[in-house]
Amino acid sequence: MTPQALIFDCDGTLTDSMYAHYVAWRDALAPFGMTLDEDRFYSFSGTPSRRVIPMLAGEQGIELDFERANLDKEEAFLKCIHLLKPLEPVVEIARAHRGKLKMAVASGGVRRLVDRQLKQIEVIDWFQAIVTSEDTERHKPDPDVFLEAARRLNVPPELCRVYEDGDPGIEAAARAGMECVDVRQML
Image (cartoon, rainbow, N blue to C red; front, side, top):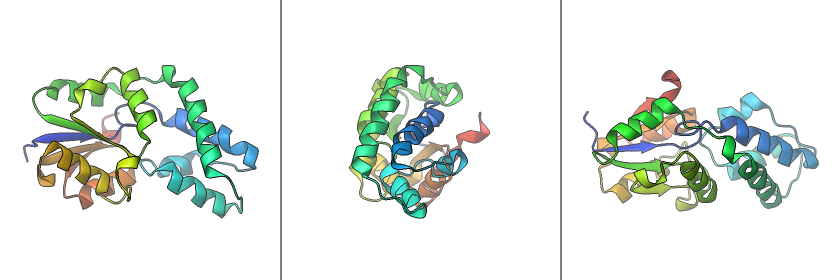
C-alpha cells in the first residue's frame, strides 16, 4: 500500500518522553501514597492518563483527586520538557515526507503537552492536523483518534500509515483499518 497520509503518535514515537512522563506521574502520585511501577506504566503507552491512573489507584485501594494529581504531573513534566529529544529515526521519516504527504499527530496526550513537545523538537508546523485526547471520547485501543486524524486530513483510513510505539496504539491503528509501523523495531 502506498499511503496518502502519515499519522504519528507523539510520546515515545516522535519524542523520547516516556521516562519524563513516568517520573512526573510517580512524583505527583507519591503524596497520595500511591506507587507506580515503571514497566506497568509503560504498558499503557498511548492510553490517556485519566483512564489509567484512576484504574491503578483503584487497584491499590487509594482514592485520589485525579484533577489535582494531573495538574501536579503536568507542571512537573513541563519543568523538564527542555530535556526532551526527538526520536531521530521517526522524525527523519516525517522530515522526508514533509510537504509530500499529508501528515498528522494522533496522541492520547493532552493538547497542551503534545503541542509543547512538538514545539520543543521543532516539528509542530509539519502537521496538517493534531488530534489529542480532548478531541475524541474513546481512546486507544479504540481507533477514534486515528479515524479523526484521517477525517481531518480528508484521507480514507485504509490509505493512512500510522507510526506507533505502544500496544494500545498499534491495536487502535489495526481497528481503524490502517497500516501500522511499530517504531520500537526502528530504535
